[in-house]
Image (cartoon, rainbow, N blue to C red; front, top):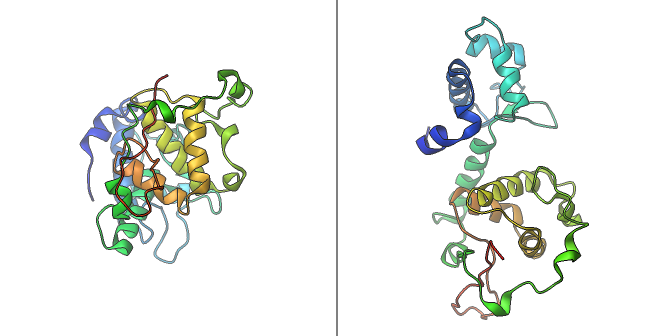
Length: 232
């Protein structure tokens, strides 16, 4: 199982956990890695593990209780799958999807053109600035935990996979600099026209890209990608 020490040591949601909870969560991650459906707590026959079964497998906390599992679920350290209630690791599931994408494409990172055209969003060309009035998006700037839920195109309204990928992408960008409504709108408009938007977000998040928007007007010729700043 690949292990990202930086994610483990720096993630505030992990560091704020009691030490025994962290140890039990680590054990659960190992079970998820060995699962027949990587990242998801399912049995070899495809049925999900119940909470009671997970507690018996992994153990109790220092208070001899099962509160640790309730804690990691309520604090969104792990997630419950909507269709069957299976407990899963978002990060592990996304890594597994990316692994399959890379295997299918035959090249590390998926589409080599997307990798080559990665965007640097820290600078901007004046002719690409978003010129609409700042107040235009005030009524739309109703966010779901700061992820611009009200700006999501109708195409993705019921697409849970896209929403999970979008949340991870925005949270990642916010670690560097707060994304504003206009930048979110530009990215969402681009994704709305993209043939594989969810895959693009997963690639961008997993590979720690700085942007997702590319200049596709070159008729196959290599051009400098469009750049969109994170601060205005």
